[in-house]
Amino acid sequence: MIATLLDSAMSCAVHTLLPAGSGYTTVEMKVNFVRPILADTGPLRCVGTVVHGGRRIATAEGKLVDADGKLYAHGTTTCLIFPV
Image 1 (cartoon, rainbow, N blue to C red):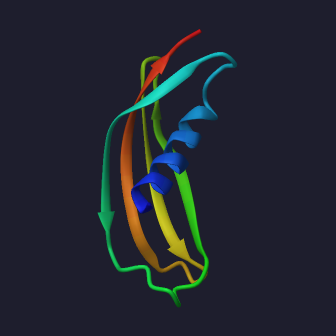
Image 2 (tube, rainbow, N blue to C red):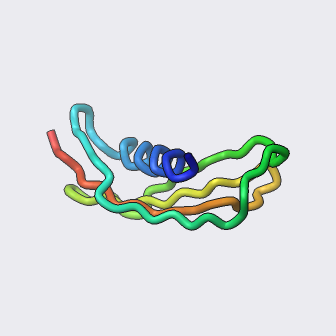
């Protein structure tokens, strides 16, 4: 579930760079699990940021943090872009 959440955040970050009608898919993804998420962990926030946005390839990173900014997981992705 954590990997899926990070993949969504990172991919959506890439999506913000694309013109209408373009598509993309995840080619590669790496996730580091830093600490466990327990029942009493509380709300978490996932943020995706573009590292590089090219014409055919884009890369992004993502972080999963709690309300205090404590890191639970982070990852990187490479997306293949299908131009219009």
